[in-house]
Image 1 (tube, rainbow, N blue to C red):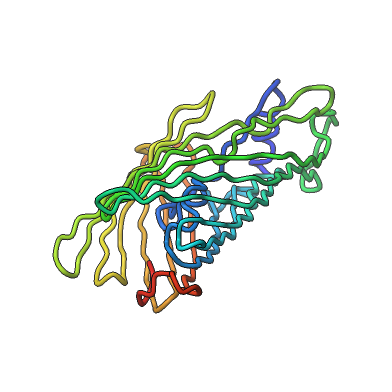
Image 2: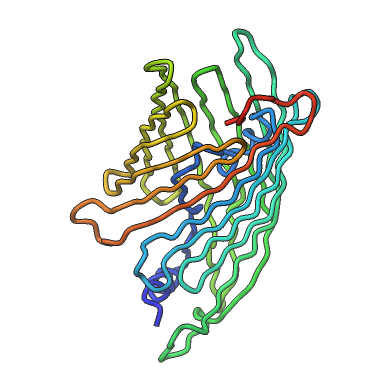
Length: 297
């Protein structure tokens, strides 16, 4: 029996059980996953894959896969992108397919302001084949339902910093199960910021933070501190809600970037299991007005 599935289904037995967005530890590499205004802001074409396995060792623990790509168009003023995301926890699987568009305005002193929108479809599904249900109940019936959703975001960027505010999915979706209305998604609000300090010609220090707000839940806070050497190699640490610690390692080779994060819970945490997240990205200058630097990251 999948332990986490039972925990999750017990939560769903109430009148509402709203899913949050999946967690990311490398969102600062490509914030388009949480903010559609980031599409096209790299002045190149970007393609990325990532996989996250949370709470390794728990049968049915959360896992997330995403593919995303975006490109700068119209003299780098317009961005267009695509996101495919699948999030699993226990017997519950959510899959999102969406398109993203953004527009960028050039401000004084090399600042830019972007606003973006995301639209797509989310499929909510449950599969109870792995459960051993002793007393069948309508609330435990498998279901599949597809809903429309849309999101918005804004982004302000300078040479050294970026600040973004976004709601990737604006609509709170619900479904009817066993005669009861079950909330399957509640909006997540994100506030993100980072600043880059040049410690020397070869070393950059970049702290960043992410605040996430969800109705009915306590705010979540991520704090990251990353050091980049020769613009190619990055090492850093992260702290989430003072109960999770992580180590990040990243390397860039030509147009490719490989990143890995390993997380551990703080002492005394209710779930004493580690988490791993790996990402692979490619950045290319395919149009005349694109950034033609060696790596583009």
